[in-house]
Length: 478
Image (cartoon, rainbow, N blue to C red; front, side, top):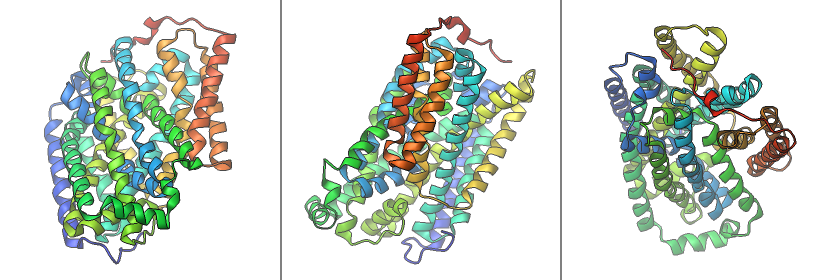
């Protein structure tokens, strides 16, 4: 998709103006928020002093990704009612992580990454398997976000996909590089306000433009399966997406880094509130896609349905609003993922494998370089647009779902077998991937989680290993 879209609703000039205005806003805000950073904790964990308002906003904004605003409509068009409802079950991951965040902060007051936990809890073999899963997922999510930026701007303005993707990635890398996690969380707060008000406004306008009765009649005539509550693939997707969302959050350093960054006592409340506020957003985003038959729209690619339907309904002003809304969602997730994945590379590769004795000052310098290098790698992987957002996203489902039980059981159950936890991740991923290709994307996470659970339970029952929780409190870094 490197050619302009002929029927783009916004002019190229308008698109460029919006892009430049919001790019400047995020860069200036990110620089201002992160201008005083003297230690590694300041840069990577915002000084471990994030309060409830910012904590809730950053958790919610990070989870409102391009995959929420663009893949949710695509899945609604593929799976119908269960597609958008199933996507909203991603909120369960946030809600379930709330008690885990409290537990993590209690057990690991000076921790940095999710991999810190795996190394200290299960040993080096499990640590490295977990790192492999985390890096694969992190890159997959980064690439899907970068692709979404290019797709959005290309669909709405006709600006070349490669240029669009490059600008969005470059802006997020720049302000994350300048301001670290403090800049990420501060900009997330503003982006959350934009997303909330934008989604509500779009929903109201969409209901005024296309009545529910007309949408229902068109769906019954042209795509009755989308209204079938017994649609087997959609039901499987419902449960698959639930486990996928839990696996994404439980294992990802995006969420662990915030548990370490929040002030004592904030983590539980912030994640619980974020889960409640986030749940309606995919339903609203997916609802718009169900208007496609009534509008007689020809959607050239599944992940373009959201922007194209909204533009058809609301005209140039609506297209501009969608542009701003999804730009905010993209930025709020891209910056968080850049920061969190960079922390993994910094702490677990640079310090963990290459420079164990690195000083705090050296680590602070390396942190910025890692953000830049990760941005360049992501850009290179985004250049050939080889798949749709949903396909890329759900390919990683088998990987992340395999970590649910090793993480959750390891935080609460002292007798988990370390080798069993490692095998759970390996076998869960392998069998989940096989099911992805043999059955379909909508069962990969479901099967992976089931295999992982079975392995953890059986190995712990056959060969339990006691663990001292005090080993999870590493000494504070300088």
